[in-house]
Image 1 (cartoon, helix red, strand yellow):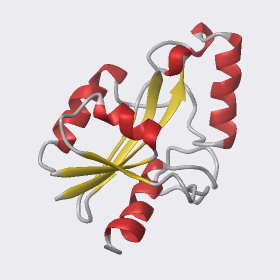
Image 2 (cartoon, rainbow, N blue to C red; image 1 turned 180 degrees about the vertical axis):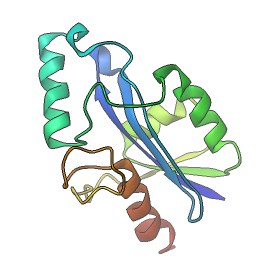
Image 3 (cartoon, one colour; image 1 turned 120 degrees about the horizontal axis):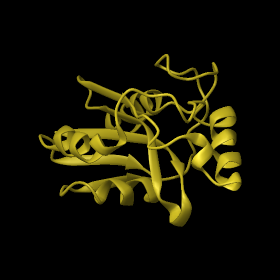
Image 4 (cartoon, one colour; image 1 turned 90 degrees about the horizontal axis):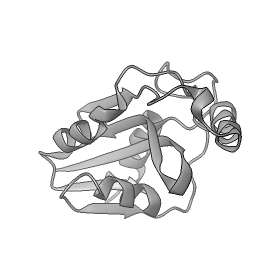
Length: 149
């Protein structure tokens, strides 16, 4: 069986990811998590605060301090989530490499082109009606890439 995953993140120094949203879809089952910030917004450098603000306003539209799931559970969640699948699909090299750090399964990259467009989110965690939503992305990728094979 195959699973399509997407993550929406903030980036810290040295390209470290802070996962904000994780979604997965296998054609039947859905998983979706919004992760808590690992520390307060004001602990970010001014440059990273600007970047986080831009992502919140213009990309994934999820505030730094939003979320329910503690960050430290990400590795357990991703391991448990992918355990019963043979192949994991992720769009883009950077995200695929990030996921590979946590699992011992084949991670297949969807081409980065065409880019995913902003759309109406499939979940209620976004502050705007047009944004990049991980849940919307996995539905789109599954329908347009997995189902078309």
